[in-house]
Structures are given as C-alpha cells and as structure tokens.
Image 1: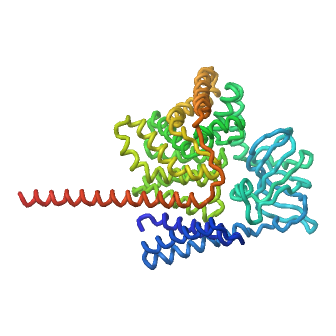
Image 2 (image 1 turned 135 degrees about the vertical axis):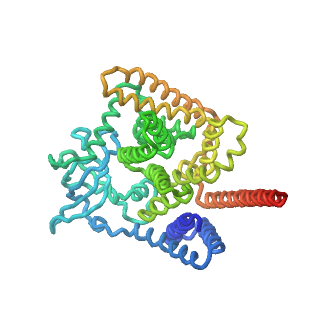
Image 3 (image 1 turned 60 degrees about the horizontal axis):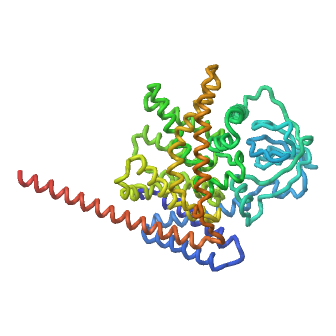
Length: 511
C-alpha cells in the first residue's frame, strides 16, 4: 500500500457512517437505504483492489469505526446517570466562548461534584452559561459552583445541529449559574499558561477596539482568532453570501499565511532553515493554544509538523497520505469529528486541493503565476466543499471565485501589518497609529468588496431540503473522474518514460 492511511481512513469512515445511518435509527428510509448501497459499493471497490491480507485489515477497521461511534454515544459518563436538576461542581475554566446580553459562556473541565454520598472525582467537559457580565471568569481559574442548573445533556442518541457539535467537542452538559453561586479558588503558587494566553489575547482585543473602527475591529479579531462572535449577524451574512466566510474562521489559510510570514521574518534575521522550521512549529503551537485548537488548526499545523519531520528524516512527504493519517487519528480519538462542519470543510478542501490543483493549473498556463496559483487553489477548494456548504448552510455562493481573488491576496499584508502594529504598541515609538491607519483601510476594503458582491442579485443560490444521497453521489462521481484522469496521466507518463528509454538504447547502439 503506497498510501496506507487512505484505505484505512476510508474504512473507518464507512464503519462510522454505516452505524450512524443504519443501526442508529429504527426508520429505514429510501435515502438511508441508498447511502447504504453506495457505502457497500465503496466496500466492494476496496475488496476488488485489495489482497486477502489487506481486505482483512479493512474489514477490521470498518467494524472498529462502528464500534467507536457506538462507544462514543454510550460514553460511560458518571454525570449521565446523575438525574438531579442541579449539581455542585468543582472544575477549571478552559475557555471563554462569548459575551451576549447579560451573560457569558465558558468552557469548563469538571474535576469533581458533590453528592449525598460524598465528593466524586470526574474528568468531564461542560459548557457554562454564566448569568453575569460582572466579575468575569478567566481561562485557568479554578472554580466551585453551588447548585449549578443542568440545562442540557448531550449524552443521548440522535443528537443534531449544535448539540451534536458540542458532543463532538467532548461536552456532556450545559450548565447555568449566577455570579453569587460561583466561587474562585485561588492558588498563588500556580504558574498558569491559560492566564498568560488569555491576558495576551485580551490585550490584543482591547488594542484593536481602541485603535480601529467597530466593524474593522470585529473583522480583524475574527480573522486572527477565528471567533465569529466578534461580528454581527449582518456581517456574517455578507461573508457567507460572498463565499468568503472562511477568512473569519481559523483555517489552513491562516496557518499557511502565518508560516509564510514567520519564515520571511526569521530569514530576515538570517536564521538557518532548521532553526526556522523548529521556531515555526513552536509559534504555531502557541497560536493554536490561544485560539483553542479547532480541528482546522490541528489539521493544518499537523501537516506542517509532518513536513518538518520528513525534512529532518530525509523522507519523501506525501500530502494526501499525511492528511488521511491526521483524519484517521482524529476519528479514532473522537468519531463525532466526522459530523463537525469544521472537520468536513477543512479536510474536504485540503484533499480537493491536493488532488485537483495539479490537474486544474494546467488549464491556466496563460495567466500570470501568482494569479494562476490563487485561482487554481480557489477552484480546487470549491470543488471539494460545495456539497458540504449547500447541506449545512442551504446556499451556494456564485461569486466566491471573484470575491476570493480580490480578498485573499491582501490577507498576508493585513496580518503582517496587524502583527507589526501589536509589536510597535509595546514600544514608545508612536508607529502603531500610522500602521493601524493602513490596517483600518485594508479591513474597510475587504468588507466593502464582500458587501458589494453579496448585494448582487445572483450572488448566491438557496438550496433547501438537500439530503445526504446527492452529496454521496457527487463525491462518488468526483472520485471516479479523478481516478480516470490520474490513470490517464500515469499511462501517459509511463509511455513517455518508455519512449525516452528506447531513444537512449538506440543512441547506445549507434555508438
């Protein structure tokens, strides 16, 4: 197997989907039956192109996928069996999600809860709705909550939408508490990296709020931290309709731009390649920690890490096999990732780029190199993500190609200026105001492009009531087309190599 993780990951996905669409429901619909037939066809294809030993391995991982998904649904949480409406818990704040109206939402890791039988130690995650905007909590705080109300449980079968998303992130409960019920437990000897990360992020947020316009500040914070909570619903609708919503969600694009910027800065200081690679790995980890390690950041950073490992080990780097290996281990750790929109978009876009970029770019040879690369990447990513966007957001942007051509090229200069502005704000030079003038205008340009294009009558098309069947057929056809083109190119390359070899032999004979 030249790319073993491709087959292993597909087998694992088939097992998860089979359990989800067939055995997880008592209703056998035409759509589910059709999906079952298509998945069974994928299994037959694997069988046709596999020897007996490999086939046995694939069958094991198909069964493993179903078993892991069942185990994740039936997760043996202690709190699942706790039926009271309120609970006394102790835990640690691991992230702040949003501030809205008179409440804030936090992610907490519960370390214990109190019952009539005594204190019980647990390790579970929950979402906390904190009914106060005063006395805010901070990531890293150790807290006790008295009579926390259990508003939602994410442990039952058949979860959909936001509840399934939270379950995919490992959350079991939604708790609610007022400020008077929450007590901070101070530990002066604790060196807390969460506090340091939060303080750094808070400083950057306050700095941009003070030096940029409201729209521009919200947009830049969303771009840098991947949190769309900084933006209004109207702003989000603009970027969704224009097909540029990916710029306000932390993605591989952000990691790629950061890597380019870090490499350029470190090369300026004449560091060697090895030091640049290691330094970039550390910075990417710190950035991922600050934004909470979403799946897209894990995927993009892990691909860079494997590239660095391949460089130091003097091994060939296979992007497709590495991508599928990352997906494989993420699904092993949590099969619910497969139903996360972020996971689907991140891996579908990257896989589509890796597969179709070499094919599509040949059709744009007449264009300038920079424009050809940008256009090819955009088209390749769209090919892989259109069905997912249509399914989850019920609309498809028709002007995304144009919008991305005008917006994506300015992201690297924008982030470079933003980082330079943050750094200059720490020095008494007064340069940050000059730089932020440029940053503000660049952000205004991005929003103007997105808003103008989104207002066009043909900007987007609504797609309602789409089910999984046409999506499965789409990706099946796409795979077949790719395999045909790939096979043709392999035959063509083999023919050229044979022709060159014959020519060399004739030259030798002539001598």
